[in-house]
Length: 413
Ligand code: HEM
Image (cartoon, rainbow, N blue to C red; front, side, top):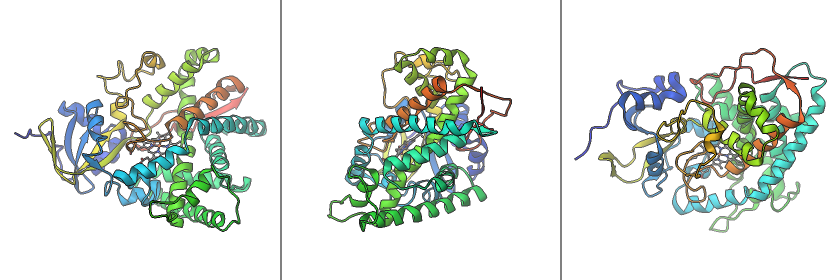
């Protein structure tokens, strides 16, 4: 027999999703007292789920596909077209291997060393600045480091505007109207820029190191022996650079966490690498960034007596799973120590998605994210003395993605 799945009222709840933001799925999970419910969004039926078991189901590649799962508006802004996020099966595994090969521990270390260097360099400018907004500084530093590491030439003069464009692509995610269009314009501009660079690398006009992301994307050969189209090479290279720039969001939330928990900051001053990592995990668990991920049912199946009909869109709640009280004691408290005895389960802690990144769609950049955050926290804790003047540090949960309103203003002391 098929169970009646709790159903959200209303013809379409897209407006509620916009209004409730990160809390949309969790609010209904609590109201229905059910990990799984049905709603209508963007004119179609959507099954929403949260929790560890739901994550295990969602990352079963025999049950779900990504083809047709990503709305055009997201491809036109955040992700681009035909990139790794849209692939399934063997094609996805092969493409994913290319990404994984660019994000190994040695790559993570290179990036961490570069970011430490760039922060020191940037700090020298700060004495002359009236106002230092950490988010603004971070996105610029990350854009310079990401481009330099990827082998993409970036003029000092253009760093600010390129960083702004990468951020606009990310922050267009949950928006309509002007913010959405800003994201589209940014993507078009960045794609045009990177396409030209790909062409120049292929013609030999620009030199690229053989193990750089630029070289790999320009000269990678698919199974048929063909290179990527110029456009696809650009889309995939942007899939490496853009998310590094987006770490600016986590850096800003890290600074907020240090400010809200001065005891933690003291502890980290003399702390071990593990202390730092637990703090970084907790920042990624506690603060909102990725809201949910979507996929379509590949072929009809039943789970917990609920029918998942072929083609149905399914959302897995990232924010809610990271605060699921069955997994996390006192989920709404910031407590890095909760990671003390953590067993590294692949489906409970899912800021970057769930499962094994080499086998499914989980983010390949988690190691890079952690190492960049680690180097930056070391800088913020041990290399620069700053005060935090009065400002509006609140962040909205009805904006996806979100950020402390002030961007985190600091003053050198
Ligand atoms: C995919 C989160 C940083 C590259 C994803 C996904 C999430 C995510 C939720 C989707 C998982 C899924 O579809 O099931 C994050 C967060 C980051 C971050 C919160 C922190 C800023 C990075 C970095 C890189 C990166 C630094 C690369 C340098 C990618 C790529 C995918 C991806 C290529 C697509 C993987 C696939 O479809 O197989 N990320 N990510 N991400 N991320 Fe990240």
